[in-house]
Image (cartoon, rainbow, N blue to C red):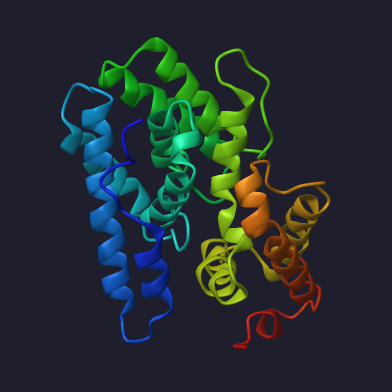
Length: 254
């Protein structure tokens, strides 16, 4: 199988995140540049029709919305890095790539239809690109599966592919606490800043507890081995902070 994209690796980003001499602006610019290059390469390699530049402009507009502190193109960049780590094991890695680009296409707060609308957008744009019906259907199912982060039984997509996409979307949970705290935990609270603290803390705790209750958070052996234990530790730590019932204490600098 051909190599993923053009040898963009996770290492450079990880070094940048924790290298204090590099500004957040440079990190963001790096991620945006690589994301765009990856999208254009994917478009070409799946023989998509139409103008990739038009679609990319839509993607930038959606993921660049001001309220997106976490669910932005930096998140997509990180997901694609994770996909590269298991690229050779995936039957159709460009289908997974496509789904990752569109899985948070709509992200309105509050809303219960983000995943459904994102799935429709994925299929709509795949239709514009004149991609096969099977590809369009599969991409929509993959995107919609992120709503409840549960594997959907369907003849159109292999369960292992759905599981892989969900694993990748949740990799941030298993990163070192500093990264989890700064890039994810605090950013999610910013995105839900309009929700009263008591309500947010209660609902957030329930969501995190549901993840903890699973026998295995990650289905794929690679992600389970590399992120499973740290994810459990991070989730427990955040739940403890949420249970302080005090937002200032919860988000005080460590």
